[in-house]
Length: 366
Image (cartoon, rainbow, N blue to C red; front, side, top):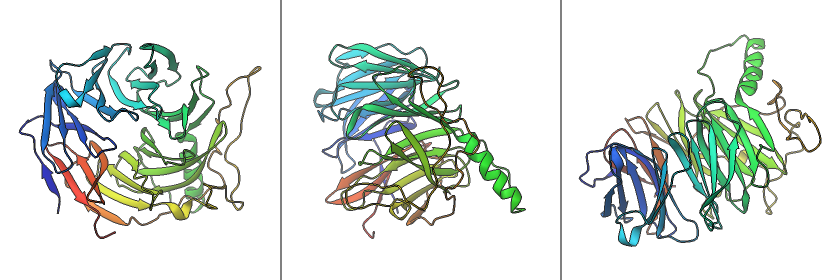
């Protein structure tokens, strides 16, 4: 049974983030922003003005009191110790911002928008240091990699997943999920069990604390695990977690369970997965399984050109089977955002849906 957090505001909650102290921030429709303690009490509320929805909130990784909130094309910088007017604004994106990410050194903020562009802001100079333009459709998510503050991942409704380095303005590696699906469909046809699914529009990515393993949730209901190796990444494993699009995936990144993953979907399901069995480790970090074949091919166009995977054979040799969730919750509402918070040493899943409340599910029995 879920515990409901209610602030008294009637706006639908769209996004969540949690700082290192367990303080939760939520953004909602019509500019509503709320800060909560980990007991579910609203300890601060602010309206960012107008009818602009707060589409993403992200705490600084170096200062627990600093919060970044996106609304329309603007990023507001807030101090939750005195939640009043923003201390400053960044208005550098060309279209509505969908996702924010701050690297772990607190030096850069990335903002992905509907134009497919990612603006990377140098937080010391308060200027755009990189404008990353390769997505041909909405860029739905951008994520800095742990332990690698110059590296980030992005995905979008063009079905592309991209790896970037802040030293370059082009992706160093790209995978098209449609190529992976095509390979999967060919195998299914060979097995006389063809079934049509939604296109794999890429909604969200999350990176494990090791920095080399990441997951991507897509519109076809699948969660795919990838491994980064230098300047490229390969598909490790794919499994169907939801009957409709997977809107959210997040690694819990706890010390005891570094590869536990939570997901939320348009099928109103929230699930917890242990994907450690799909990731071979030696105690020093993830290793490539010798039994698996390399994924995809690379092409070069000119000296120093970005390497990309355009092959329909992108997932050949990789497993794509069904694994069972450790926990499946019939939440009852389409999921907007999920996150996790520690309360008295216990992990809890936070869920924002189509309502004005936040739902909390304890993982006490796991």
